[in-house]
Picture: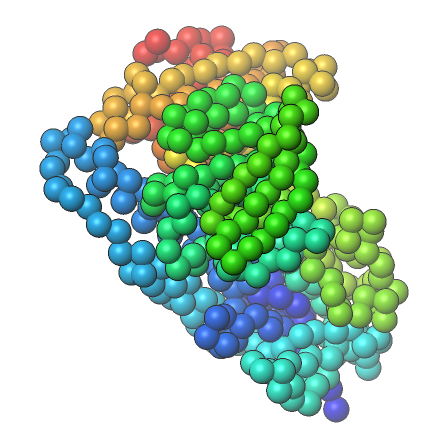
Length: 483
Ligand code: NAI
């Protein structure tokens, strides 16, 4: 007899595990299926974000920034450190320990909330005695598969995430040619690191290895840098990243990629049509991600993926099959952990008959380079295209006391507000700690704040957040006080 659950969540990444926790909080009997194995061959919760994404990359970004600070920038504080030596093995072990702590943390959350972890790969079988029937097969660490387990669920949440898109004909071995997984664990700092794609992963991991001493060259197909970001922010980020020594070539057309024993040779054509060659010790391919639906048995419940491989859903993450929901990277919208989390909460609450809502316009974006790049809402380009009249206010960190104190005077905040109503329509930040500053902007936009509202709120002094307040004042009928 199959075991029965009210809710079965497939995938324990940030979308899936949060959906499971919220469903359990609402009184459902919940199971979550997860098959991820870490490099030690152990089953682990947390999906891409915790194991080979957001969490380990942020650990390495912080460590590499500390190394760079100690190597070159502490002197300006009057702190002399002598010679600085990199212990890469220790740096990687610190990152792995953070990952282990976080993934074990989800096991704790599952125990605390009475969520069953079904270990293995989930596949829809069809209709069950109650709701849908799912087969869970643990493929084993060495392909030593056990017997499949059958479960029936009233509600199913597909939260299977995404995997790195690879280039046709270029095998990723995570030795010479890496995706995000290999690029987080290079055993030594490559002398020359090539990166295909100047998106989020290319810029973040390119920054990590450049700070640790690699000569990093990024080849990007698009003719514009960070096409999704505000033009002014992209321009400032470009300036700062170039100053740090990151070489980025835009408008490139990729040709052959030859992998040899001692390196990789990439042929590409530049924006002017001239043939170019990039020779590097290791290559990172970061050209986007594709949704994970392999072997999920969607056809057994009458579902089909769309032409890009996503599971089609409505605005509330409902699929065409009754009580089957899909969230996160496997559905439309940005592939961001926090978007997946919010969708997880939403579908759990909808399953319980509640009326949650996500304002997709208020989902913040962050790129954890130095300076960080973050935004929420509309860019000027989008507002112009929509024909919406707006006002812009901008404030630079070069005159913010806190920014000067911490040695991070680069960047600015830009606030865009409706010309007639003063409602905040978009906030764009390029600065240290932009990831935290943008949260205040998202909160303001969720409450439909006006620029003047932000300007009237008391902000701590000295703090980076004062720049947001000043930019809001500059956008409103009032004026910035410190400019
Ligand atoms: P991405 O979509 O951010 O960037 C991929 C880049 O590769 C694009 O600029 C694209 O034009 C370029 N590209 C595609 N094909 C190419 C080719 N043949 N030659 C040269 N360039 C090419 O994807 P990325 O960086 O792989 O990240 C994957 C996902 O993970 C993204 O959706 C991102 O949002 C998410 N992510 C988010 C992070 C964050 O929120 N801080 C951190 C890391 C990843």
